Length: 173
Image (cartoon, rainbow, N blue to C red; front, side):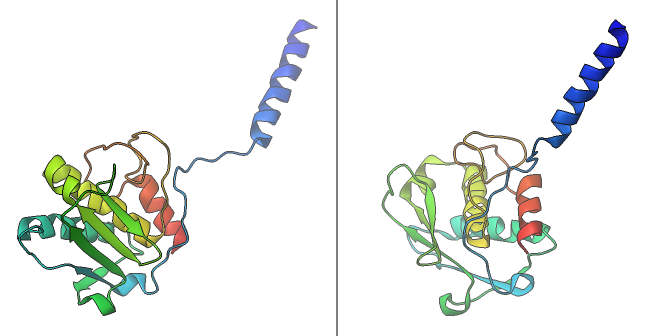
């Protein structure tokens, strides 16, 4: 008799677990979306005394890293009016941020703190992260994880979009 009761309880517990909603993805969306993701264009403010060619190359690497997603293909650098993703550098700090994407202006701004406080890998990861915002991804969880560069805090020293980032792009586009 005890064996049957235990089996019934186990079946009820399993059924309850199966009926619970499961969210396996960490990605979230913001309101952004580029119009032609298979032929996307980007603009990076040209090198000047504060935004050197080396820094521009790190940002470009962050932009082109999204080509790993079959839904996205950044094809060429163009002038600012024709670009879906526009990037600039300002030689001052923006509070606690290294960079930010402003949807209202559709522009990514990197700042002095990004240039002076981060190493090459973290600067490129920041570029990947901010381009992710321009493509429509929002922040995920509060801490590092091994599945996304789109988290709100910290670095995981990855210079490419990760599995949840790519899953979000696949769903969005």
